[in-house]
Image (tube, rainbow, N blue to C red; front, side, top):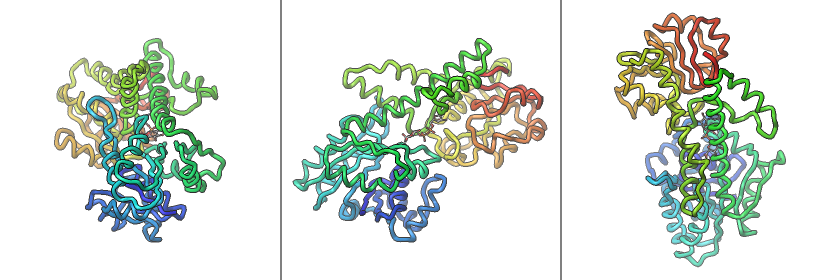
Length: 434
Ligand code: UGA
């Protein structure tokens, strides 16, 4: 099939590349000429495991091409994916100006039937707005469907190629048939393509992300309570997770959820609820608790140093909001950096992928080490903010030689508490005994 993807951010690029992988001819459109030139030269502009291999393969096969011309893109595809940014407005709502701007252009340019697919995470009612916007500029037949993505950063290729479900909001049989044909190769396992109305599809995305954020937040609260009463959240988590109604996943407490999706989507659902006269009280709590959780370790660090962090050097392992990504948006590490700097501490950070992004933000306010042990050399304490695999089995002997104090503050519960006692470390984590 002939596919066009407008917007080559994270979602657009993964969508375009993976759709080319099943034999479709995909044209990706972006207004950023420099980025398009880099992609045309075979360079993947983001870090995402396994994307590079299929990106190169499909470019070489001529199935994946890039252009800055929206008109050329629209001429090409029968299905046009909109994978455009929907940034958070100051009031928490999703800014639709990119999506509606392109919808206007689509209305001006299309000369044959097209299915316009909203892939971006957009509030309930957006498909309708896109439809109205296009229709203002053309009498050509077209359909608009909502097809939210459920890709996790770090696993996006796998999630796209083997989705647990595909949600399509469509009120047109013709569009539904085309979407089913397009996605059939991805659900050979029998996983469902769930067809529903556009509004329900739009809400499914927000409700899924908000539910997961709430699930994590609930466990963070349980962890905080465990600390007060001397229970072990790891045990509680295992005890709870074996109930299949609860499930084992997304029960890991820590220093809060971050990233480009959960924080933005929870706020957007809360805001769009209010706009429609519904108050999602639970989401208010989720947002509040998560803000506190991000700096949960700070008072513990302060207490250890008797309230005085000035001049103390903190080794910080992990900057990305989660492993396998260089993304630092809403990362708990940034909130910790701000708080530690404010209290006069010095920071030496290490992250396998995200250091350049943090350097761009903090320049010389913090230092960076070229490897994980380098960060701990002469540091007063080690703080862990992201659960990269490389941090899971460190050389504790080397660590204790490097650190001035044998103290680790772990925001991701990487180590067994008893093991740490045996290694001779004071180990302060989340929701477990010290
Ligand atoms: C999330 C969803 O998982 C995807 O399904 C969705 O498509 C995506 O948002 C999106 O809307 O685009 P992502 O933000 O990549 O994906 O990351 P997750 O792996 O879901 O993690 C989100 C945050 O929750 C991270 O900060 C992570 O550290 C935290 N988390 C996750 C926990 O604190 N505990 C857990 O048990 C799980």
